[in-house]
Length: 371
Image (cartoon, rainbow, N blue to C red; front, side, top):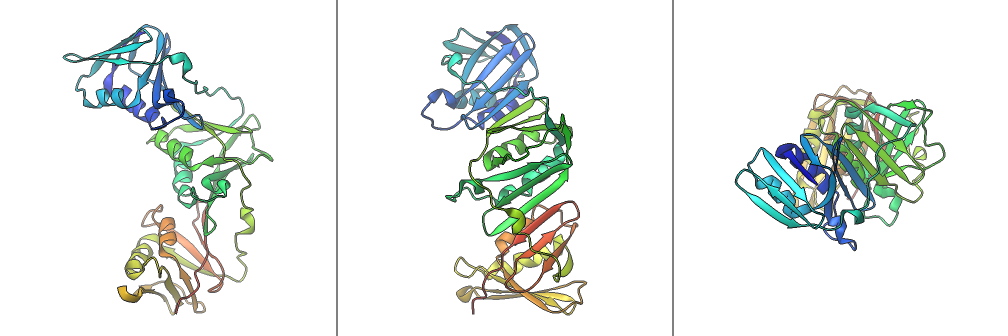
């Protein structure tokens, strides 16, 4: 294997692939990144066997095709610390030589044939959607997953794919986030009766791989895994096993609920202020709607009390509810400050429903009032 490359392009791709490589593993070779050079170009691969990424790297001039396993930490530091625009690389399968204009490094290398391949995207059936939409799907759902629960199905995002679009749902049992949107089904692709739960870590990797890409991505859900292709990257992930809650049963019926229109920025600021005096022992903030305003009251015992008022366009019946401000803020901080949303309430014991006009909905369970 012998080639020259543009260091900055290799660095960006290597960091993406290296983010998947585990710090510790029963299979030490997984703590590396595999580089494969062909006449068509260069490919980097990283995997922990549960999640993997395959990245096509531009800026390579391949003189002799081949493959090499690169130590994640040491090779990553070479790319980071070097100031050379171009690097020359060659390997005989046992070691890799990296040369810059005034520097040279020789690193031991393991057998590349022992490194598991990350499959390329070759599916004929898939869903296609804008990358910016899927970035929103990730941002608006992953925070509601629960990776600490013994219920493994809560440690990922449920993705439902139909002929009309995509629905993504995440819950930790205390709140539920759902994002819907249009996505084109190609070749009649749906996940039918199969349950597609993508692990939180894989969703976050997909978001990073998308970057500022405004092109379309392709997503295919198979029985046990999922593949996502975005630009030069293909991400593979095994699915989370387990039964996801019947999330539609959690959504409150809107009949008889009071609907209150709010703007994110002012409401988010008021919630943060009221939460200043809360503590681990007393997390709740009382929300009292009525008379053209919201009154937020925080009670923190030894930390004091907070009273915050916010004018709103609401002249319906008075209604009160106690909510955990942390969970409410999780919903608010993924929205733009000038965005409007609706909060729908029935009473102090029923779930609150927040929603936007672009398919985002959030169900939040109330807290018991502590007096």
